[in-house]
Each structure stands twice: as C-alpha cells, then as structure tokens.
Amino acid sequence: MVELMHDYLDGEIRKEDEQLLRKHIHECKKCSDHFYRLKKTVSFIENLSHIAPSSDFTKKVMANLPKEKRRIRWQRWFTNHPFITAASLFLLLITSSLWATWHENEQFSFSKQENLIVKNNTVIVPKGKVVEGDIIVRNGNIKIEGEVHGDVTVINGKKYLASAGEVTGEIEEVNEVFDWIWYNIKRVGQNITEILVK
Image 1 (cartoon, rainbow, N blue to C red):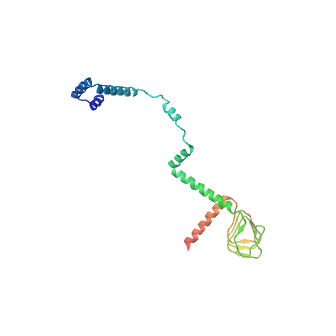
Image 2: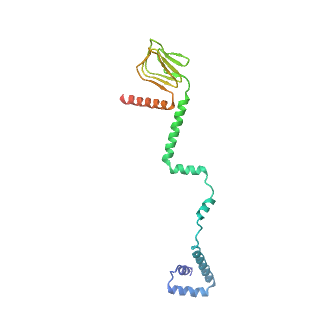
C-alpha cells in the first residue's frame, strides 16, 4: 500500500490501483494517517519551492562562515600556482646563496705565485720581476710594477699599475655583487670550454 501511496503522490498510479488505495485508506486508520502525513509533506515541499532567497543571501552566508587561516590560503595559492612557486623558490635560493658566498669570505686572500710581495693587504709585483700565471686578490689591493703573464682580478679591492708595469692578460676589478656574479659565470664558462676542448 505504501508503494501505491508514492505512485499516487507522484501522479503515476493506474486507475484500478487508485481505487484499491482509496478503499484501503477508508478501512485502515494506520495507512490513512500515513497517507495524510505524506500528502502534508509533499504540499510543504511544493510551497517551499516558490520561496526565493533575498538578493544578499549568499553574501550573508559567506560573511557568517569562519575566516580562513592565512596559512591555508597561502598553501592553496602555492598549490594552484606550482610554476610560479618553483621559480620563486629557485630565485630565492640562488639569491641567498650568492649573497652568502659574496659575504662569507671577507678576509684578505690572493693566489700564490712566485715573485709576489705582500704588505698591508696589498699584493705587489716588484719592478723587474715576472709572474707567470693568473693573480686573484680578494679583499685587498694589487700594485703591479713588474710583469704579469696572465690575467689579474681584484675582488673588493683596487689595482694600481705603475708606468713600467705590464700585464699580458686581462685586468679586472670586481667590486659589486653583479660584477662578481658575472665574473663567476665567465669562470664557469671558461672551465667548461677547457673541459670540452680537452
């Protein structure tokens, strides 16, 4: 009988089943009460479907929701933008690494070559002396009075070339972070070229 009640309320009941249902409801109090409650529920739902929410209903509901934590919001953003996240992390790591390397060794140092004299953080190539090979001076100065058969690089310092001094290679001063980065990129490129040529 309950199945027939549902068919009746859905409007899908056959004529002979409807007559059977009506007869049974008049005779059975329990089924009559159940059918009445079903009809009442259907009427209530049908009436609710005509009610429209106010124009700011969604806004009010969203305003009453608990606020999302900032950390969760950032996690969602990082998840939705993986390329930007990876590129940002890469740039951050490279920048911090370069910055740390730039500042990690602020002590005076120089490449060991014959015929060099060191006085007060100044490397001197004496007059009449020849240095075979490259000279790199960090956090100090170089004064060239003799000859250098190679490149001279001064990082965080100054170069002084006397009138009689001579350098067969390049002379380079690296005093800024960007110069230092470019200097290291060139060195890596030269090393790679040397390896490939061999």
